[in-house]
Length: 246
Image (cartoon, rainbow, N blue to C red; front, side, top):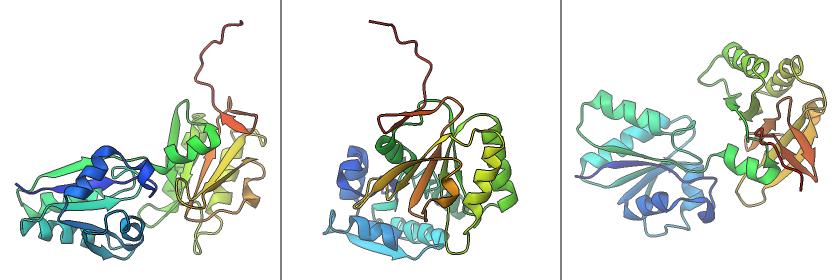
């Protein structure tokens, strides 16, 4: 029986794709995805049939995947990063369940932006952390800022996705103000642009200076907890191991 594979292909580069993700896309008769994500993998799988939709058309994308599967096609519905972290996994399961169709759905994980970005900065996520998206397309901004407050109060390392867009220019500044209520201004902050993709870059700054940083929708921001420090240009959040003296 044909199935739908919901594939997290990582940041975009082939070297970040898992063996399982590559195998699923190679086995697919058709690959469905957001236009920008399709553009990232077209050259890697040039012989495939691609179907794409623009941003904010996620439900339509899932319905296209379902219709292709009903035709007997093996389908790969792709997400960048991990398909189950702000990806297409949940929506695809909901669409299939609502349809009543008996079509298997397999979720294939991938390297999410937090992992890719953290590796460029050092080891900032070595202790408990929270990932919060500042996009309010699906969640009210009041709820988002409450989550930021709770994560800050709980001393979690905080990884912020979608920190700024043309319409959301001050959300990161508001989040920084909330976090600074519970953290020192000198708390290390890592900013990673286009993590794992061509022309990626990263920089280390502080919570106090975060408001002045240049960020966009392709940026993630990792804010350390009370134990996080910087050494030799690397951000490190201790796990708690005791290092024996030699």
